Image 1 (spheres, rainbow, N blue to C red):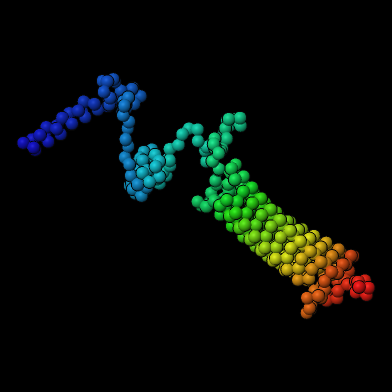
Image 2: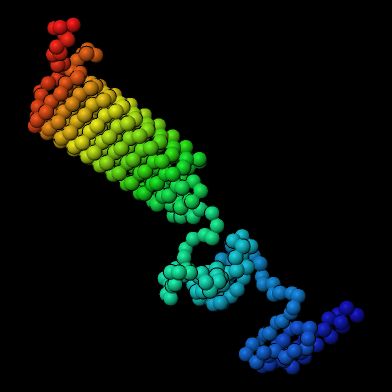
Length: 325
């Protein structure tokens, strides 16, 4: 009996197929005819069309998918269509007509069209699924460049521009980094300004430093209130504070010396730990501090003029109070 029923059903299906061959087909509950422009016309006021649902892997494994084949990707939560050919499938998500095109847009009205948000949510940019920029109106952090400000936790008012600029910053506030690896290791330092490739790159907690020039204040970690202008200026400074250096490689080797002023190319070039020095002029006090064996060596010297006190190493200035206490 079951086999007879199956044969009857199969016969009815074949008969129906022959009857509708080369005709438009309508599926509805109103008995309305199909639209003349559609081979299949489905209409309903309460139900929709459910297309095949499958994983991304299942979609990509479809053999020779027809161009225009439509499926639902249950992993990506997107409608997908083959925009390529059966031989070379190119599965693309179906987006609304108002979406920005990957190949450019025309007819844009700057008064109404924009890329952005309509609420206070920040905009995040990514490259290879890694953060490459942020615009945040709440924290007032702004960055552009691969991994800029990508470790931020509660730091505010920071600006980073360039590859890995301020990439380690977490709590630091009001820092500005411009250039590849500028302020790269800063985590909690505040009020720093770095402009130039690798400027202040090693700084972690130092505050209120200004470094302008490639590799200026390069090694500085916790030194504060330093100003370095020029390539390699205050390059080796680590914890020295209150130094002012202007000129190519000025105070270049200074590590812990503090309250020094060097203006001119390679001024105070070899000074490392001596403090309270003033050198103005090309290579002024160039060798100061080299060979020092006592904590009192090479302190409080002032040299003005090109190569002034160039060869001084350990001598300290003679003070009137040494003779008239």
